Length: 339
Image 1 (cartoon, rainbow, N blue to C red):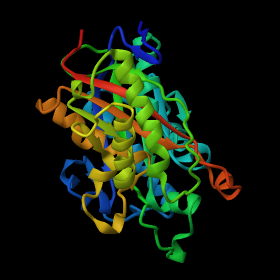
Image 2 (tube, one colour; image 1 turned 180 degrees about the horizontal axis):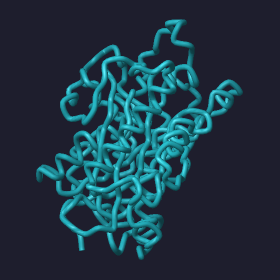
Image 3 (cartoon, one colour; image 1 turned 60 degrees about the vertical axis):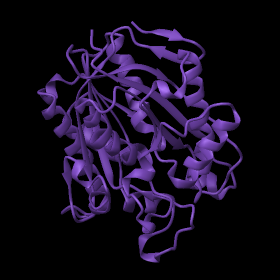
Image 4 (cartoon, rainbow, N blue to C red; image 1 turned 120 degrees about the vertical axis):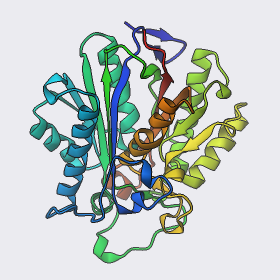
């Protein structure tokens, strides 16, 4: 069983292996610079369904089924499905769990859900409570816009600091099975951080301090400098939030500039229509599973620190003038360390 290291980090005694993973994305994501990396892509935001919510559900279901298939397992082999999304009552994940018939733990960590689910999944496997766990978040531009912002029919323009919710899903199978796979070595749960920002169109700035705190805490706990990792990957700080992260960490004595990558900046490349980049649960999930994990298997990365970030506000709290509390969880993944 794992042990606590430093202030907040857990180091796993039997590091759970990433047996399989998958990514499913929509048209805009397919047309980005990493479009060829994703397992499944589709051209129509409805994907043949009657509503966007049904399309998101289908997207997450396909991600889960594909990850299980790539792992060489069957649905009956999975002991826990850990899922989450951005919708009220995490309905995409709940309905997918209903269809899969797998014991289900539902999470709401906003855009941090990929890290959140990996954290809980890794603890479950390392602790001996499950042999195989699936972690599966999703997001959809149209469903998120309708819930958090404005009806699509209004055509409301975006501010320069706004980001585009990714139409994407990803699933990871964590397993106690031994072998040469990417392994979750350690994890650092984040603390809720609020720097007083209440602009819901500037999520990157709101989340950057949470990312900085978790990254620095993790590095201090394991006694390493940033260059210990080949890449420190944030989920969706976007262009503006990433600049703030580098600046804020530098002021605290940590230079992240040489190793930092942000999934929100990467997903759409220099597409100006996406303003400051991508966001949403599926943004980091699709980039982790579509690009970073395959690159580890190819030998291009040995160690990565994956830090998905989330804004824990709601439309109600925003309308009431509340500031935006944010979270980030760090997941250390290393290639070929299986016992």
